[in-house]
Image (cartoon, rainbow, N blue to C red; front, side):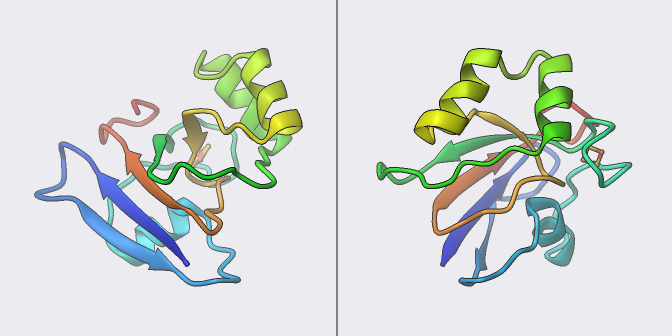
Length: 122
Ligand code: FES
């Protein structure tokens, strides 16, 4: 099970939700389901509105860190990820700090998601 804590200055307090094994909802989908106001527009990795910062709360190896091609391109354009970080994610499963909520599916990991509430303003 993944434990996901959402935090933003536009929320009264942090909110923790759980994603059960096999859940393939994106972070954006989980946020919507629980009334967490991550900004979004396209839902397809194109606009960058759903930019989030991810902090991993467990010090355990990550598995299969996968970014979609759209996510890589948009994060690079926003200057939120370098080519080196993309390579580290693909080769060594070292996840980047910034992701797109509409492209990111949490696995068995405890994470903290922060966002400003401004589109693209994680
Ligand atoms: Fe447009 Fe996620 S909503 S990139």
